[in-house]
Image 1 (tube, rainbow, N blue to C red):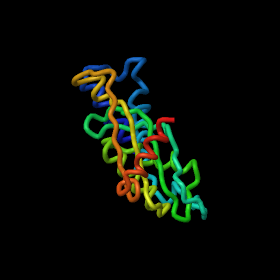
Image 2 (image 1 turned 90 degrees about the vertical axis):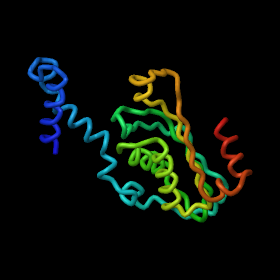
Image 3 (image 1 turned 30 degrees about the horizontal axis):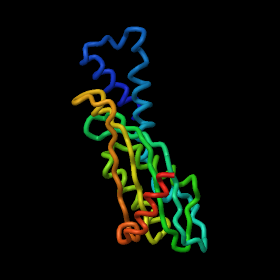
Length: 184
C-alpha cells in the first residue's frame, strides 16, 4: 500500500504544479504516504485489541473522570487536521477500565477520517461497550484546520461536542456533577 500511495502523492504534487524531482520534494511522496498511513491507523485496530483485557472488577460505583486526553484527527471533508482534547466520565457497574485504555480508545477512533460529532459518539459507545457502565459522558473540544486555514479562516474558533449515555443522559444531577468536576 505504501508504494501505491507514494505514486498517488507524486501525481498530486505534480498536478499542483511542483517538480517532484527537485531536492526538497524528492522523498515527499513517500514520507506523505507513510504519514497518512500513521494518521489513519485506527482502521487497522479493533476495540478488543486496544482494550486488551484491561477491564477489572471493582466495587466502586462513583463517577470516574479522565480529563484532557489529547487528540489529533483528520476531517473527513477536507482531510485537514482537527486537534483538541477529550474528557470522559463514567459510572462503573462492577468493572473499571485500565486508565491508559481511555487514551488508546480515543486514538483508535481519532486516527480515522472523522467528523467530531461521530468521534464523540464512537468513544462514548466504546467505553459503554467494554465497561458495561451505568452511564458514560464524553466531551470533545477541538480546533479545526479546515475552518482556520481555508474557508472562513477563523483562527480562534473551537468546536465542542458531547454525548451522554445512560445515567448521564437520564439524570440532570449526574450530568451536572460531571460538568462541574470538569471545571476544576
